[in-house]
View 1 (cartoon, helix red, strand yellow):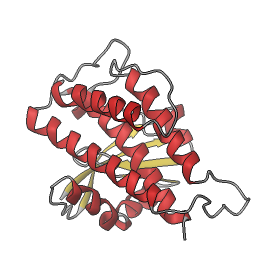
View 2 (view 1 turned 90 degrees about the vertical axis):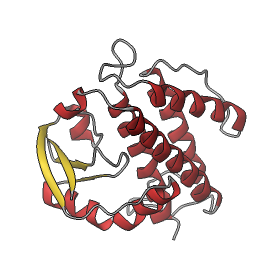
View 3 (view 1 turned 120 degrees about the horizontal axis):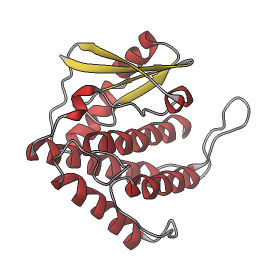
View 4 (view 1 turned 180 degrees about the vertical axis):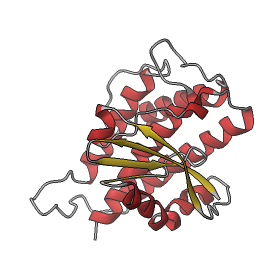
Length: 212
């Protein structure tokens, strides 16, 4: 059994797992969002296995419904569950870091194995491969500030700068066990991992879905 949380706002329902950061789906109803999680179990299992973890979620049980905010209505998971106000232990922090690293590794592999141009949406929209990767990296640079990590902009092909950014992110997330925000006005570890992981995984699956 895996506990699932639901954020609701406007026409959006976001289903996510605290235990498995990055496993999150956004739809227009709670039922559809939970079903989308079910449909992506096999895909998320690849990430968990890469992190050295067994992923057998069993039944998905909605344990809490959370009133969302404007970001939720826009399709971004942004509300903390009360359980996230509790400190985490070192093993949980390292598990989160392993899943985040696995997500980053998979993103880089998917980018490398995908064509530059991706299939467009019905209205001709959608970023191509490199634009998606650039968007993910820039978002991470912004997210990192929420845990006290600041890096100047860098070119997408600057692998040294990207590695430095991500290593500093996991260094903070792996050692900060408090439920309090890492920096004033920022995010705590639980939410930071969940938000960063969601964004990476969401775009991995977007590239995979649009490269065929």
